[in-house]
Image (tube, rainbow, N blue to C red):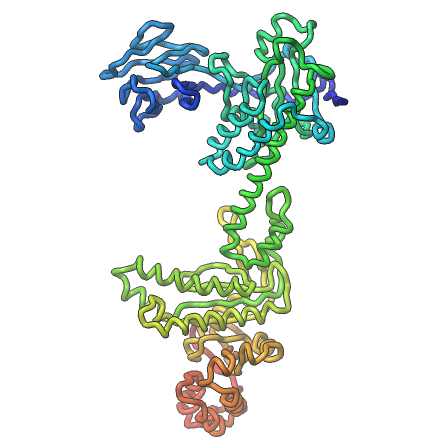
Length: 617
């Protein structure tokens, strides 16, 4: 085995960060599994007892009263005071005591449970305690390392899924992780989670010692910063193992070796696994230099743990991000995000806003204001019904490859053409609209259904817009912005006046007539109008289901209506009226033109240009 020594000990590096001292109470019961650790909070006294309602509950110790003692931090010491009503004594050094002060490394006992007061910190390493040797290992070198106890190590690794799945929060995950690594490395005295923030400050997370009475735990800040700065994997520091080491060296260091294995960034912080221990009493690390085969195997095991944890957490983060986006984006877009993700993160550039050709669908519930007024006594029930209606709209938009943008009260905005351009985008918008109409009409056949009395109006427009992540630093949504959005909203509003469920703008009407098969949907030109607030008139069209699905209006009826519209636009209102009179009375769309014709006694007004100007929204 060829080892790769790291840079010489006198290499320049960032000054070590200030120590972050942590005081904890390590609690060990009569059985190995009866153990706990409590971080002591200086500003606030903690109550120790057997009740689950106290700050430090120890339910297994029957000699504890429900509220037994008060724990108070006084600087670097722990003050313990027995509470009134506590029946059994606390023992310090074999003597019963009602109140006492502990220094680091001391303990007290109640019944069969020992309470160890310890401190830990990632603190600066004095120059006199620089490591004798420092190593890093390449991935190729570690691949050649053989485990002496492979079965036990593999068994430890097999527990990783339950370690991750059972963790309730990052702190719990860290605690479970250090216990697993400590079990997997026989020569380790202590294992900790360490973090290094953007300012270079090293802090100590969850940690465990094999022997609770071993004294203070003080990981080396130099080792932590070296491991993260070099970004080449695990860095090993060896302080002992040869006769040349000063006699007081290891007494101060308290360990023979330590290594730090960096892990992936987590919420802007770098974190890793810190392991320290001693060589066997027979001496030295064995093998080449001081970092012999056993220590190399320990490094390999820890890196395997780190890689598995990194992979699972990245997948969790990715899945969490995608779970949110699945509410807005179609499955093909989600698949594209998954394909372009790197290191467990999404390629957010795919979602950046840009100008593109989009098809916008605006769908609104009709009569919502009236329902809201009549249901003022049951707003929760109304909200549930509206949520069910919005779910239908959203489901069909995403099912046909669209992106759901904003929810505007009782309305839904969907759009196609972003983040990927597609020739099918306009047609898919129409397919989604027909599916929404179909689903709401089916609900009307069941009078007992909570959505049976709901109707929708849908406007669809095609044009250029800005689409993508739109918003402020505080709130960002995936949406679309531009005049085409306003036009789709105006078309939806016009569905009430034209008495049709779905309206298309001029561009969409032409596109559907040219490209959509009649077995999927049909169109008919309804009128030439100028919506309120818009300067340019446009010919609007209705989108209808195929004839087999909606036989009330045959293709012949649609042709007869458009013949009447041509007469209407040309000012031949008498001929227009006769054509429109041939349309079935159940078709309310004809009323929009026949009412105007009748009001003017079938005669077009002077200066007629074919445009109906809408006076309001």
